[in-house]
Image (cartoon, rainbow, N blue to C red; front, side):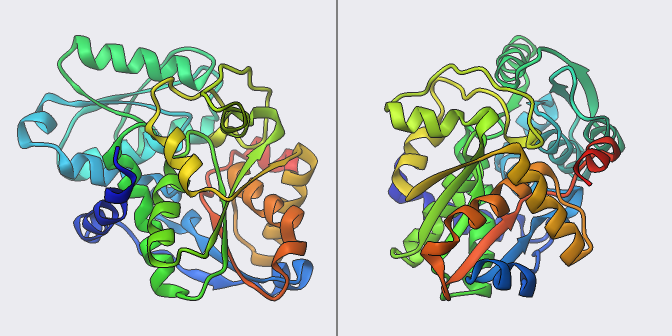
Length: 319
């Protein structure tokens, strides 16, 4: 994928999906501003339809398909949010399909996929295994596979979050983004740097599954085990040919790795201060801000609250 074309594709995606998604608020956070010394704004993708930014990429991909491709049906692999987004978008566009999820996926996220009209099937224990199986299933059955991140249309769709941020806060100095496969940070980072080259883009990952961070350090995509983490939405491996690897290297200025205790503390602080739910991945980005706050005193900083789909059991554990 040519990196210089991505920002233009993000703009096209923003126009394409506008009738189908919610423009989410960018709210100033007095609490996190006082806590960190930065001027903190929260991009509330937890308020998106289906409770996650993933809907942006799902709609952009489906709307980019031909009617014949949509009629053949679609297949997705997901730890939850991508699956719910694809199921929701398919139901709105009259497309059928199958969502594969890893065994042990949060009940809350599985139920969200089913409520959105998706057929759920379980396969594998690591997200990467599930993705590989879903690709094979799609190929064998003449269906279209919708990757969670390894797809130009998906990445451009996630980047539309950046289009909104640029409009809502033109003078942002830095953005903190939770990273799994890298679709969100690739799209958002590419677009924001195209309109503001000095903006710092920081990738945040849990220490329990810092695959992208370690891969970038090594200069190649690594196969690494993932430990249990509150940030289930970012856990798991990365496909060997992922387009997001080079995009992440191009747009990311710093990588921040956080502990489970730091994630949980950030989640509790957000819930107490803002009276909303967030999932572990969003807590990762907030924890990343706390670790790097000294570098952004009195600067305008954005944190993407990437989703709010947390199970009752995990919420109880965090609190």
